[in-house]
Image (cartoon, rainbow, N blue to C red; front, side):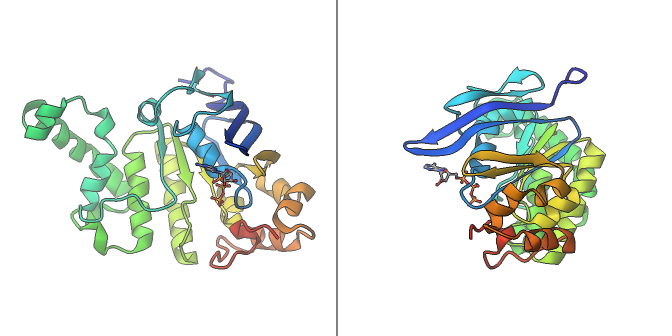
Length: 285
Ligand SMILES: Nc1ncnc2c1ncn2[C@@H]1O[C@H](COP(=O)(O)OP(=O)(O)OP(=O)(O)O)[C@@H](O)[C@H]1O
């Protein structure tokens, strides 16, 4: 539980280096409970590195990260997941030959307590836990509109549906905080609109806080309460999307000059095509 007034997630003076490369430099921000918080920035700005710090894949060179008031530093990704931080990945990480339900149930495995031997032999506690996990996932499948295809093999399903299955698997972990890594990358505008609706529905129904990395400015403007803008590993703006897209530093980082196109694309509609490296696809000019 988060004490009244305390942010759910707090990063202070984070720094991450790879040899001579500084991926993150003195990054601080807070995310409040229930917030939809986006992280944007051009290619190489440090977005993925930041997400990897938040879920324990990378340990920062210095600085601190706290979740519900407790430090995340030194914890492994599985321990961080068990604290209630789930993550989706930029590239699909599903088991293509398994069914929708089997993929989603995998999200609950960190909650199960049966040992390796009983799990492998499928008896006793392991069997009971698996059956309970499957039962517990059914309302989630319904919430995510996957109940009617729960027995279908993932391989045969459209890309947009696969991304939704991945989202459902992250939700099966029963997170408090959901980290989304470019959830609409590679999607067409219809798929983007649909996934945005599923994410918002899940957030509301499950009382989630969301941190989302995204290049699609139109999507960010539509769904995010606040946006953190990174450039060369540094925070150049942290404000509402409307303020961020008209901030001269953000405009410079994306366009190196006039920001009209950035504002236009942010307000044009939910989706901006990202096939070619336009400003909203994160390209530097
Ligand atoms: N494992 C690594 N080893 C060395 N350098 C890395 C590593 N991961 C990231 N970097 C470097 O850190 C910087 C930030 O990279 P990062 O992937 O976090 O940026 P990004 O904003 O997510 O970019 P993109 O939008 O292209 O995914 C880049 O200069 C990148 O080359």
